[in-house]
Image 1 (cartoon, rainbow, N blue to C red):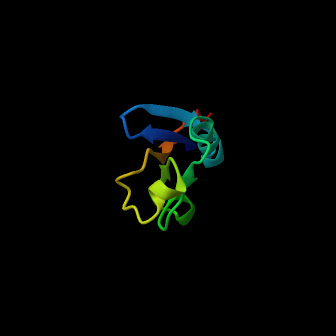
Image 2: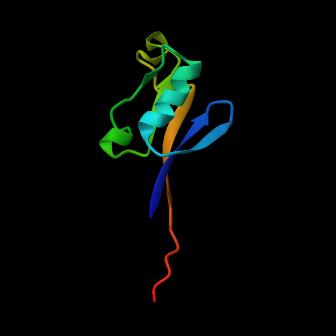
Length: 83
């Protein structure tokens, strides 16, 4: 099983192929230098996604509706030949 991460932007655009969550966050920081991310139940808590906001003010007391993106884990089966 191969695990990568993808960024699903709120506008529907998807950036994929990140080897770690930190690399995905680094990519978002290029566009959003005041990025805020993480919440109870996120990927660090074995959840299904990590929400990201453009700033602390946007993230404060938000239910996720103001998030600019979500980082998701993508697991792909690897085909291995056995002899």
